[in-house]
Image 1 (cartoon, rainbow, N blue to C red):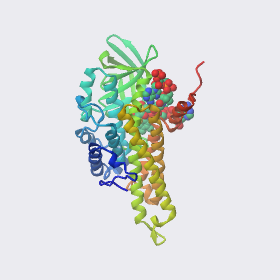
Image 2: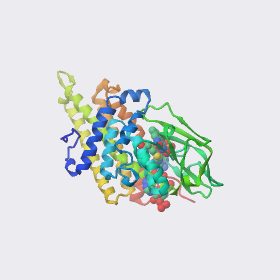
Image 3: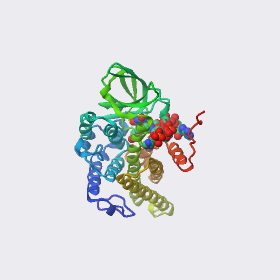
Image 4: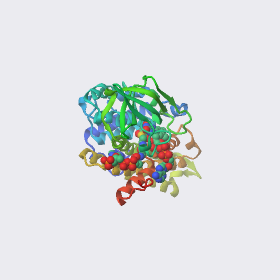
Length: 395
Ligand code: TGC
Ligand code: FAD
């Protein structure tokens, strides 16, 4: 049922992986077992992102690991990249979230839409974890509908001036560079690399979270922030470019959610074997066995979905609607598994000495960000019916 390293593999996916992919997963898995899991409950309770991990992960070139080696990245397959996300989220969704934002939402657009100078300036340092990025798309009044953003970019001599507010920005106050999306005077959305030390820029952390507590989440305020022309991403023109970044991050989340679910399932299985009630292990009861079988079946289905999505991405044939299906399915699956695990753990399950409750709380955010479950339903609904059900039709 498990692989040599103890990773859950009921359907024998392990032999389908390359040697490099297995090695990557096991290396990250050991790091997470040693450096994340023993202390993450305390960090979560304290509301602290374990920042020292950034250098550890960077030393292994785990950020933007599917980007090319010529920019200091690891040049791994998309399956290997997905396995990294799975292992990080087996530790905590906040740790995976940091890596998603760094790699998929900041490094990827610099690679895909940036100039050669921008790539050389940022990608090697970000791959090594020496520089941190954040991605500012969402606003206080524009989340699911980013096209309704209010942040504005005005042309000024030598560049641009940005005004607006971004909300719920992962790594916002610890970033060395903020990729901010703003609407220009012609109504076209553009992406800008903003130095947080620029006058008029400020970041304010959100401290009242009951989810993603081991992750920094901030509000960004931009008041007449002046950007040089060379800090605009030349290819980041049009809302579709911002949405293209989301596809990369959602791909990683589809894998990451599997990791969170595995952590919860393995914890619940071990507990059920040990916990005695009515004179026998609770694992000996039919109801607990059914819960565990349902959890394992759901995880296995999600693993197969993620694996095949990865092969499509490696082949260059993946569609963004397929990513929506995998993100939607796998995150909701993980949320169900985490809640079931919490139930099996009884009263102990509400503490942070066990992991299920923390994962369940985190997964509430994961279910919402990068497109809510319902938004992905509508993306898929539009794809299969050809009818847009998001809002009022244009007059
Ligand atoms: P729509 O007409 O759908 O799209 C405009 C153009 O973009 C194309 N497109 C995509 N391209 C690549 N990837 C995608 N995912 C794409 N989605 C759309 C589309 O084909 C079109 O191209 P063209 O050439 O025809 O112009 O635009 P819309 O305004 O109707 O969009 C609706 C909707 C709901 C699909 C979209 O806006 C959406 O996905 N909303 C959800 C917003 C969201 O996910 N925000 C995430 C913010 S970042 C974040 O949460 C980080 S969390 C931290 C972490 O990742 O761990
Ligand atoms: P809304 O869009 O207001 O949605 C509220 C509810 O209405 C949802 O249930 C939604 O599904 C539903 N709804 C909306 N439209 C429709 C419709 N047409 N039909 C049916 N139902 C609908 N954003 C970034 O840009 N960068 C980040 O780094 C980032 N990190 C995040 C980290 C965390 C911890 C969280 C919680 C969020 C983060 N986000 C980030 C923001 C995230 O992407 C948004 O919260 C998400 O897109 C939803 O937007 P909203 O919160 O404004 O909800």
